[in-house]
Length: 419
Image 1 (cartoon, one colour):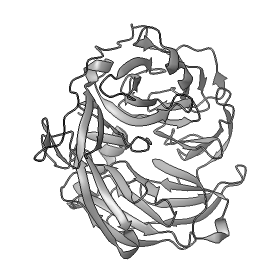
Image 2 (cartoon, rainbow, N blue to C red):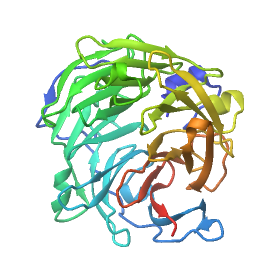
Image 3 (cartoon, one colour):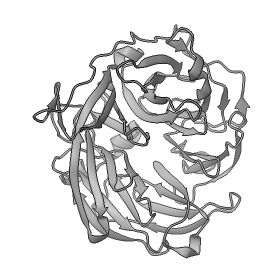
């Protein structure tokens, strides 16, 4: 979601209503402004409810059943934001890592009939509506728009042995080579975290900070890139796509407000721009994700629905030639809701669509410009208009097939494909 300063520049209405330092703090507790940590009630709002006749309890649905819902009160929070997941490779237990305005919550969702709210890591400094989390190995890396927040590092193995849940957690380390950040991206294959959307007046113009996390609790900043300006979100891959000129290279694809930036960042000391590209009716270039063959890049623009009156618009670019990417096709959804974060699993694109909930798109024939909606689960039944409520993000990568959603207004949802 866009920062409030950007919204004032780009929109005529409001949505919800710095300096950087260097180093790693391995001993810091997290600052909750001297207040006791509100761990919440831990209450489960709704349990397993099948999707029948287009509804699961109060939620419109097609093809997905509700397994579990926990409201924000359960976590002592006012707003939800990002979400990610972790599967313990030793136990195969599955965990939801839930971004909140005032911290990050952890819920074991292996058995959704008996979920366990294990605890909460408070924000490093102050509360913020913008928080983001990714996982490398057995560690979570958390950033926020909160001033001087840096990047919290939390050892997820600690979730195996929580004696009296919920627990008030502290960090295992905290990287302070930047202050606020809008998002964090991780290339797990290479062991690097990429903080984006930092202060616009920092060394990289709010672009991207390169952080070596191969030793997760001793992260090391090794430069960055800002030649294409502020980066709102990104994906970084070790490239194995159709353009053999870049096979094995580490490629950064940035959603940079008014353009996509493709950069070779293999040499961290000397990143090289490959190409930048735009498209018609740019509102705000927000976030994108590769198809699994790295041929097509699926992009969401966060403001084109409000600025131009589109139904939910998803743009697909052909990256057959990274030096010459082209717009391949455009998909318009069935509602006017704003599209947000989207991720690919196989031949499906899982799109967090704010007030229209999660939309699941069939991309099996994307090469022939055919994209269709095959399922949905709408956690915001009040309407599907172009507003900043509902599903912020989705994590569709559990081997079990569970999908976890974080709703700005209603918290955690766990859903699964109907039988």
